Image (cartoon, rainbow, N blue to C red; front, side, top):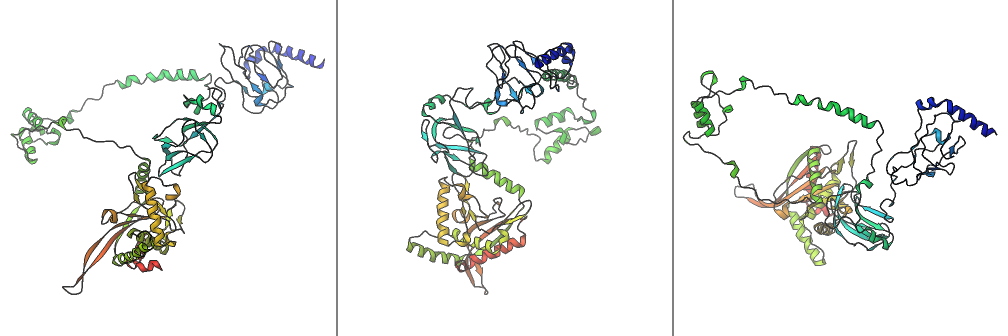
Length: 560
């Protein structure tokens, strides 16, 4: 009886407060068709169309729905996962229910909304595809933003296991193998061999768990709409705003059609008809000639004087046919990943690093003699020959240990000085410029340095360097003297390093003696140190070159 009396009392209040419900702010519950009934935690069902406005803040308010369903103040807090919608009829709009936050109190007094639009994206509900996994382009190096697929080592339908190589990816510095992380079957390859410019994260393949699901992805294409959910549904006031904004757009159009200001008479060029004809025949702009006639008028004599000053004859009237220029024959070569990264980093280096250069000539006769002796020992023991570049790398490492200020890099907050001496060696290949790194060079012997340089150079030419083969260098050596005979050049610093040594070729020079007929011959090699002036001051760079020159001219000290 108590609940019955309350219901009767509330129904009377609803009857006499009809106007109040229409003007107060209320919560809108969308219309549902007879076949699209929402259910709220198995409490009350809405069986027919309903459009009910409820007064917020009244904890005792309730609403009855046609068909006998009701919502009362005794409803429990609603679980967001308990609200659902059944497919509507054919002509009814698709509607979904969404609860923004856990409801406290009753459903009537909280933010229950029914936005119109697609439901939350699921794994494969909309397309009817079985469960699958999208494989994206991985980031295989710190500077990688996009990559190319060199070749696929697995085919569609093949079984894949964790640790197996799926494909070879060409990164910004090398070609790296991409391994599978989960067991399954390769259902679809979206980007085949040779695909280029693939952004990191872009889908390149699809894998499934069951072999029979492979055939279902034969015609699969990734949907851009699924990848990027559509924005929220526009509210009702949006269309009027757009219509209002369109009205004043046409108002400024008449301003565009206004005639321009006429040219002032002061800007006109006065010339006689004969002078104009002569200037036209010789392609002479009248604006370049100062008139000597009345009121600054250009006359025939002015044109003749202008032509005489240019070394042309008045009687001749040469005419150039600009349309007869032959077309250039050329070929466009696509940028490789290594070429893009090299261009970007070198441009960044020249624009952001204050370079300065120090050059010194080093006497290399003793170095050549020591190299010859060491190679004799290497050949007898079956080892690889030691090159001049190997000795230069060793001397540079020892000089860095002696002058550690050059073994540093710049940051906005501090200068980082490295305790490891890791030297990058520039290697030119058909694919581009690579700089593999030799680690802890100051602690290694010449034989080990020679072996590592040759091994990494071969990997660079085969385009098979891994990130650990070229990352972590603290200084770079670039040698164009031995292989190309370049006498001297200035190299660009490889950021974030602060120095790079450019090595030229060795050449014989005449050294004058004390007497008039006294002279000797000696071999000299020019080297140029490029320095970051933010890190290496001029005196520090000179000190490093002095230490380097000492090791080159007295190579026995490198063996101590």
